[in-house]
Image 1 (tube, rainbow, N blue to C red):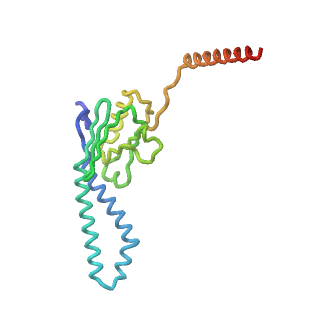
Image 2: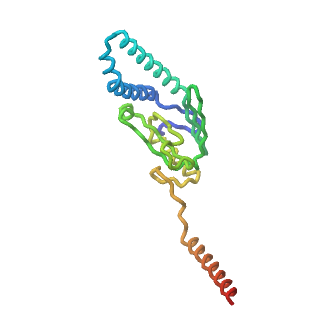
Image 3: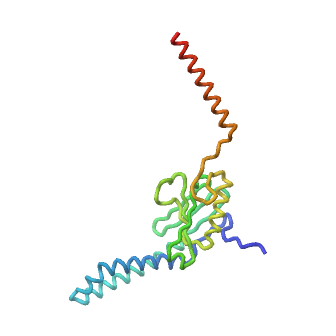
Length: 205
């Protein structure tokens, strides 16, 4: 029985639905930490309970709006692999689309935090030549199940495009020069130096 292909070419695919839970859990953990260190002590010392209740209601409303935005963000996302390039789109209020040829890709890194590990998803960060040395990758394929399969597929497409990506998917290496080519270059340089020396000796005479 042939193995199932999770990322067929020229077919859009989306992140795992667990992306919504991942965003909400991360947001909740960060919010709880900030509130516990700053807001909750202030609320506990407030003499007016009505103000404290109103503040908590605002927090709940903000959390609900964030959860609604995350669902819209998930619905707006898709990625698509072709034989020579990758395409992607995302955004709720501001839509962002991109096309990246495989021959520009230099790094393929899988990232998985504790919450992502629990949800069994990973993010594939893709660095390109134009973004080398920058902390933020050009593309992040977020909340992907079967991430190893996706990385291997992209790495295969990158190799077919002629990129010098390493076997481990991290970094590039310049094409190795053959011994014959290196010797030929050295002989040409030596010949040029001999000509320059001959001209200099003629000028002295």
